[in-house]
Length: 238
Image 1: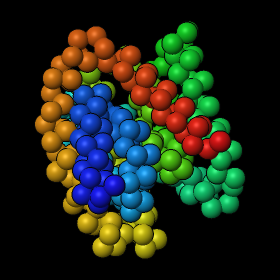
Image 2: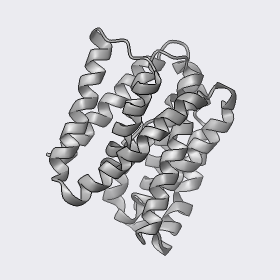
Image 3: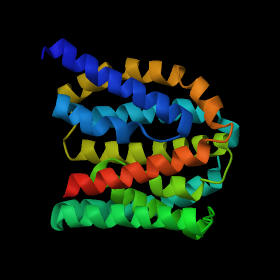
């Protein structure tokens, strides 16, 4: 397969992921990370994180008035120590078992929220979700599902804008850490520039999906993406 075709496929994956995340508030990393790694390892995590950061900034700006800033602050406060745990786990613990445990925890919370538990974005719950998201995101680059579960009963604009604001802070933290670790260089910058136009096109195309999800499909979509993230994390660790 030629280089042009491979990078075209990478761009298509990011475009589709941006359409999904533009409509649901999360999902691009879930869809794009595994496939981008197959195309070129240099495309993850830095270029994908850059694309996620810019996408989240655009989404936050689009529905800025709906952001739950108080909730975002609690989730980010929890994410900081969660990121530290994730770094420690990657460096010192069996990553497979750690990832399986995090994925299983998300699945348990998802099932409980469907069967009987009605989660609410309280300060304590948001800090716990941010903590889990920090650990999960560091281990797998997929960190939004725990917070998304807490907002599943909110209106579509509230979910999308708040998750986007949370992803902005999370992406910045991850990129700073990677930069300090010397993981950002020429190939990563080139990969970021390659993915950004496809991300922007996907975001522009997400309007119809956003309106469709707001007509009663937002919660099923959030649950499906959160569950898919947890299952993928477990499968990648086995």
